[in-house]
Amino acid sequence: MKDNLLIKYMNDRFRPEPKKVFDPGPVITISRECGCSGRVFAEKLIDRINQKINDPSKNWKWVSKEILSLASDELKIHPDKIKTLLNADEKNFLEEMIASFTDKYYVHDAKIKRVIEEVVRNIALRGKTVIVGRGSDALTTDIPRSLHVRLYAPLSWKVAVMSERMKISHEEARKIVIEVDKQRSKFKEAYIEKNPDSILHDIAFNCAKFNQDEMVDVVFKLAENKSFI
Image (cartoon, rainbow, N blue to C red; front, side, top):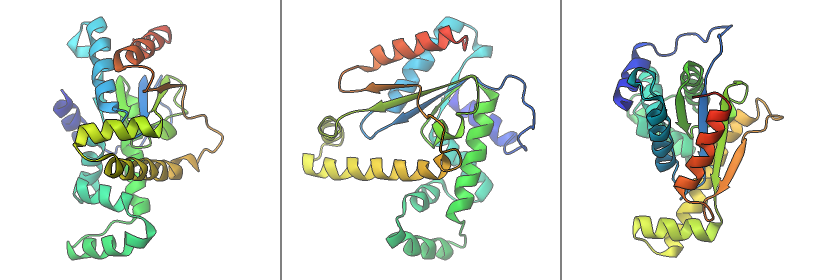
């Protein structure tokens, strides 16, 4: 299903955003801290929604890494390179830039963010999609039929989860958690600056206190009440 969605957007990608879009959405975004699995949450939520719809032609989809794939096609740059450039701090940016020139391409960080913004916006406007990360919460707050979910947890909980998941020490896991959360916040900041008064999240869950099924139940009910499904 996700492959079909990717093909659809690649065939019709980056069409100029209409000035007037009739009833855009619905879209649900998931922002998550490291260790709080947005992928599992999205998969469970999509399954729940589509079971109720019971009509394959009207099924919802979820996307995350596909956004980088779509952006890479437009920029002619490998998705992994996009991710590396976006995550590079100022100290390492020159090194990454030189590596990009060596590979016979270089795309400025601002252009990468602009293209990702176009991809996220186009997906969100078409609706019936759950978007995991990629600044989607900040980029879609103006869409009336949107619901923005935040998954967070205490540092100690996230460290324990990542240590178990990656089979590494707590010390190693702590470094990873701090760095991943730092990079995700940095990536989103550029989009938040465009609309600093926006409230990004409609509902937030502490993953240390609620399991995935409990959180999905709540969001599913909200989506029902808002007539998304």
